[in-house]
Length: 208
Image 1: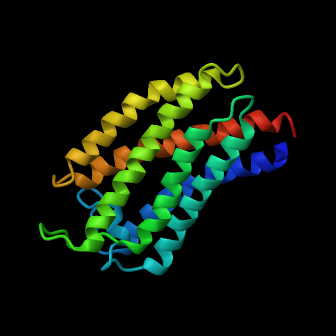
Image 2: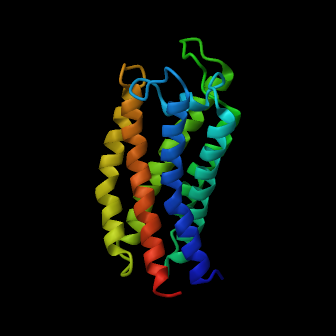
C-alpha cells in the first residue's frame, strides 16, 4: 500500500506535467524559425521533418510519463471507491502520447497521408477520447465521495467545456487557425490535469 508521501509525490509529478508541456510547446515554436503557433498544430513540432527533436521530444515524453504517474496516484489515493476506470483512461492517454513518437505527423500535411501519418491521427484521436472520457469517469466516481465531492462536480462542469473545445479543435484541423484551436482544446485538458494533481497533493498533504 502506498503511503501518503508517495501519493503526494505522484500528485506533484502530475502538477508538473502541464508545465513541462507548456515549456516544450513554447520552446519548440521558438526554436523553429517560421513556425506559426496560430496556424500549425502542436504535433508539427514532433513531425518527421521537425528540427530540434532531440530537445523537444524528451520533454513531451516526460509529460506523458507524469500523466501516467498522476493516474496511478489518483487510483491509489482516492478511497474508499477507487476510480479504476477513470484512472485507466487517464493512463491510456499518457501511454498513447508515448506511442505517438513512433508515428510522427506527416509534414507537410497532404491529402495523400502515409501509413505513419494515418496512425498518428488515429492514436491522437484515442488520446483525445480517453482524456475527455477520464474527466467524465472521475466526475461520476467522485461526485458521491465526501472528500472529493467538489472535485467530482467540477469534473462534470468542466466536461462540456472540454468537449466543446475538443470538437472545435477537430473541426478546425484544416482551418488557418488550426494551431490556436488545437491549443485551446489541449489547454482545457492541461488545466484539468493541474486541478486534479493539486487536489491529490492537498488531500494527502495533511495526512503526511
